[in-house]
Image 1: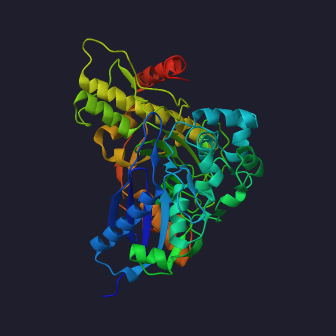
Image 2: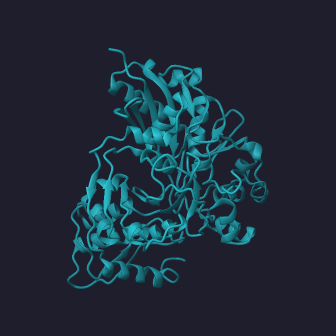
Image 3: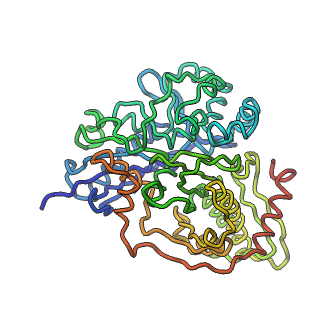
Length: 493
């Protein structure tokens, strides 16, 4: 029996690489290979050696091939979806000059504030890029590098995002896509190109940047002989432009021009993220107005503290992550790594409302509530940016698609459902970023819209549906009241 045509979708995240082997005809996940990354840094610093990402990609592909039992010749295309915003600077040979600054490195908060002021404020940035600089945005990190490691900035022969770096290793072509580029802070979603005035402001030569492909599914080249040897794959297979991890998850969910528009998805991972694909170009300073991988837009809000922060609180309390109860009077804002939304880069955790009868389980539940409210507060803003009235009954009834590692946790799902009052859909596929990247690879190898490809792959009956419950407005108001009153004096605003 002949082997099916296979595509590989790569999810290169903060902590690890996953390489999913997907049947290009049916969307069946045949195998997933995994390899870990190494993140270093303290006091706001978060860095990784990009060479570790490349080695992890090679290891993950090899592991996936071994698990599948398929011959390498069955693979027809590959695409990378990577963690957004990281700053990679390359020498003339394409090697990293220094460790990459990751999206959750908060040292560039002063540079973000200075850049915002230099262009004329949040509205000026939103009009051009769709987003206001914060510590996570690549432009802020480049400015930090210029001020704190000027030798590396001066010697840079190439400036890349993490997924760009890996795609270039695959195809030997410096390319990116509008989705990931829109998180850099120097790409204009208004014009669909790098913004010359912003590049001048940043002292960044456009010649150092990769070309922007029309979409993340565009075939930007073929797998080189050297990359093929490192990966154990056939040379010459299609390499797609790829995209950022959030854009790829949207494709995997079937969100986009050929699928669902203006339907929110909430990702519970190291970060908490809410996004939707829309034809409306977002222009809210409270959101990131990204481009999507398929030519639409992807308004998005991201928090720094989600599952990792709650797990830390569980560890401090000596509890299993599921051993939690509603927080009662306690409010715990688990901003252990600073915060991005709201923009409080120097924030730390805050606990209030403690009583004699407060239990450990309630404290852990309060951490869930604080993290969930933080990301859910952005949902109404997101829907407004899509041109919708969040209070309209038909809009309020739209389900939240819950994804990420936290979506598999009972307490996470119940907390989000209780505080949002919305029905939840928990997709059956657990590797949506890799699945979306595989759809990009399938499009690059055989044509077709990647969102349509992913939608055709979706198997009915695999999603878990949770009906709405009455919204817990009392807890919501208690948490938001503390957040609004404490942000300036106690949270480092």
